[in-house]
Length: 194
Ligand SMILES: CC(C)(COP(=O)(O)OP(=O)(O)OC[C@H]1O[C@@H](n2cnc3c(N)ncnc32)[C@H](O)[C@@H]1OP(=O)(O)O)[C@@H](O)C(=O)NCCC(=O)NCCS
Image 1: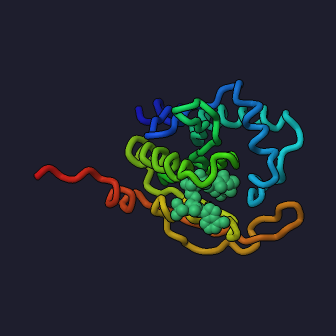
Image 2: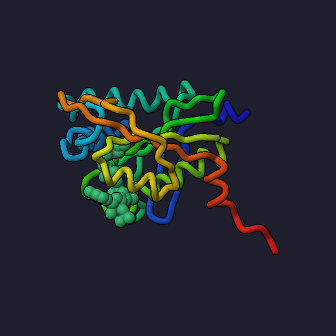
């Protein structure tokens, strides 16, 4: 039964954010996000040039859900309804109960704790509702903001994947992180009644 309700992308609400399934109407915002070279600075593919790439992204979000291979959701502010980015648990491995966390936020939304707040909500869903045991994440070793987000979320650095990415001809290393269910539970379980 868990598999049936499974990776239908969830709608999750936090103090300041709503995480929700993507809609076709997000096409323009998604294109603007992924065509910004500063946002894509440490991403493992070049900034988009062609709006059809946004169509392929939205189709991929639907396929992830349909194939139970992950959940990628749009993030918007509750107060204004403005789209500020996306976050996802991808490469979902049902046998090993593991998935990989990824996220991209718009420049205007950086530095306000939004990625961390969205990450907590999605991890809570992944561990508590979907019964994941392990979530991994990779980030370019030069991407200090992303490393900080993962650290704030409780991830542990496992090692460096040397020269794992080549973006626009530039070779770089990835840091690989993980967060285990037992670590999540020990810091997020409700206090037991006295
Ligand atoms: C990485 C990213 C998601 C962070 O989003 P965000 O909403 O700004 O993150 P938060 O505000 O929750 O936390 C960012 C933390 O990094 C810190 N930080 C930001 N820039 C930094 C830098 N250059 N060096 C060190 N720390 C930095 C912030 O101070 C904050 O830490 P603090 O709360 O201890 O002060 C966002 O910058 C982004 O989308 N970048 C482009 C895409 C990307 O790199 N995605 C990740 C790929 S793995």
